[in-house]
Amino acid sequence: MTERDRTDRHVERWLPVLPDLDPDVEGAVTRMSGFTRHLRAVKERSLLDLDLPAHEFDTLHALAGRRGRAAPSELADDLRMAPASVTARVDTLVRRGYVHRIPSTVDRRRVDVELTDAGRAAWRAAMEVIGHEEHRLLGVLTPQERRLLADLLRKVSLHAERSSG
Image 1 (cartoon, rainbow, N blue to C red):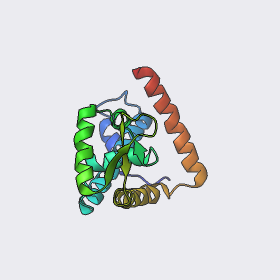
Image 2: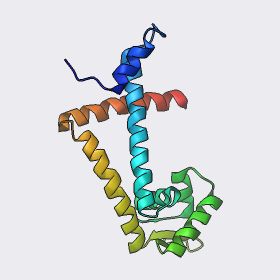
Image 3: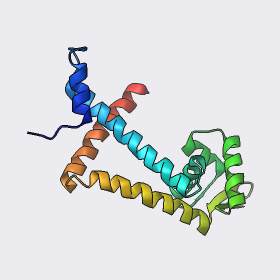
């Protein structure tokens, strides 16, 4: 018999109340929500320990994802926020020594934002903690199981993206 978890007990409680409840759908959604909450809590704790507010980490993360250099408009797009809000974030990160502004190589009227060594180190320190927990959780799966999980979640994600557009 498969070992039972908190979600199994949750589903059992709700089946008599909602007889049409699909236990597999409820179980999958409840577990995904739980993993998300857990990883968010680990991220929040690690950022607090590193004295790195979440919005600063998110900005450093977006910048790192663009190989450490981007236009503020690109960061605004990545972060789904107004360009003026990104400017305020960049100002804060400049004061902390995590980024600096440099002339654009493609448009002399534009100024880009670039990670400093300190910014990259702060981002990497947070990523190390977050990544460690992700690997710890998914480490119970074989490489093939992780691939299958990623493929199945991609299928659901693509369906959600098509449905919401």
